[in-house]
Length: 168
Image 1 (tube, rainbow, N blue to C red):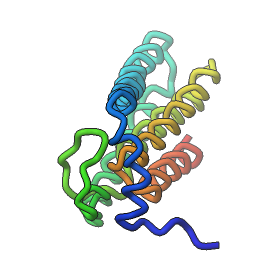
Image 2: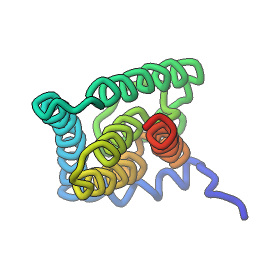
Image 3: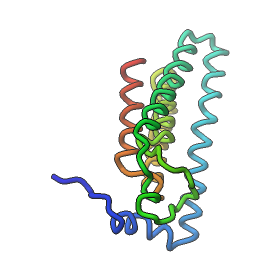
């Protein structure tokens, strides 16, 4: 089967319903910020927990996300894919003016690698599961708000999940 072909018309339909509803667009913007901040604040809290507990996996919990983040950042800079709002000249729902570096989504990658770290290392698995669900929601938000293609988000999530499985 053929995937969704991202055209200006497809992109416009996918994001237009949000652009045409100011209250919903604002809610999506707040949700995007809230999930991002929540996950990224949870990470140093989790690292402090590992430190206090004397957990021997602390270094691993720092190094795996850090090194993989740097590699993903380098890779996306090399590819330098235009973002949907750049390619189609339609404003995104979430205020964004970054050019290029769309593939893979670093927001989604970061959220997923942090979630995988917590899921695998934390004894309270439910926290990691909730974080993975929030990471998936963040990915959906990044797509419907027009700042990433579906492939950008899927690549970010898959890379993070594979890194988590392989290196933990």
